Length: 470
Image (tube, rainbow, N blue to C red):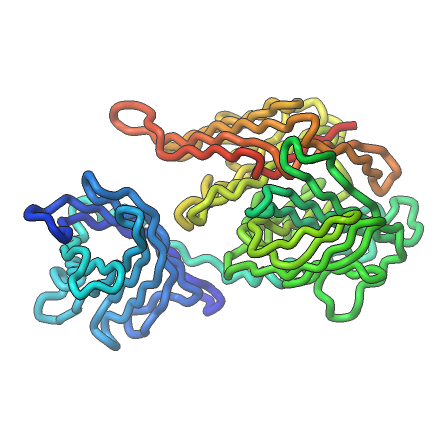
């Protein structure tokens, strides 16, 4: 197996914990997803980032994040260090499995742990978790993945190879957590279908929260296309969208932002191969799905100061815009993120089909559905995800792998900006974008008793959405 692969796996443990001040033990359940940039090999020490949930009966159901050190031979331990929340107080859950050859199974499946909170001398709780081989071994082994290690910075590099009739986009959206203001930066390369020289253009838009004024926007370009050597992104006459930096001027708007991608791996909304091999009419990828933006945006006489504003940077490459489309980016919190693209192609024959849905939900560090084409094509044409595209509301629903999802997006007219596009062949299109949209997402899982809600999220004015047509 190539050394350019990492390791992902999921683990579930159950047991008991006695919390400080209590005279009885409570059932506890820990569900984790670990992700390492390295291959997990038993003779090595492997470090991994961990996300998941801790459930303490009657006291807590909280997200956890932290680190895991797997060193069964070199150090004879598997060390867990996880941050969580108990009674609105930040806690550290720490413990390790002490691996011994005399009791290999028991030592590798038993995790004594301690909960600490604050500066007090006494721990907030002590307990023991166990990996139940009878019920957890099969799903544990089935969860292992060895994904290629993707460098998000590499996904910023221009894809255009000089072919006429192509368009390439770098775009960033963000929400200021202090004011609720939305931001949209769009950078585009167009190679006209008639073979005339390629050019760059784009725009910036600021979306005040509801009731705080109209959307402001300004365009830049067209400018000759000639990216700076080694820039690794979009550069045109002082406007830049490169790894870690976004800056430029458009009319009365100017911006200078740094991007912290947080080490998050790219999110492939379309199949991974479609980005590397442009066989589809267009493909989209999100190199920075959970980035944080810091800097200033000046619009008119106002200045917006962003401090670790949540958002994302994405890429598009293809022949032009769809006949009709809808798009959603939703930061769901606790490390979860949802990306949706639903589109009707302009190609003859395909333009008569219902919208094809490409949906990717990253929850607890894992991406669902597993197959890149599963939402769009289903299985042998059956079970495709469906979209009802319209304004001010559009929806997407679908089912795959024992889960189903329902997405509802609302784009109020006063929070939506209409802008015109032109394809490389000159065909016009119009997008209606809102960086302060509302969204409601329900994820359900099928069990013995039928469907039950696994998670649901409501975003009020923090969803990023768009509907376009011709």
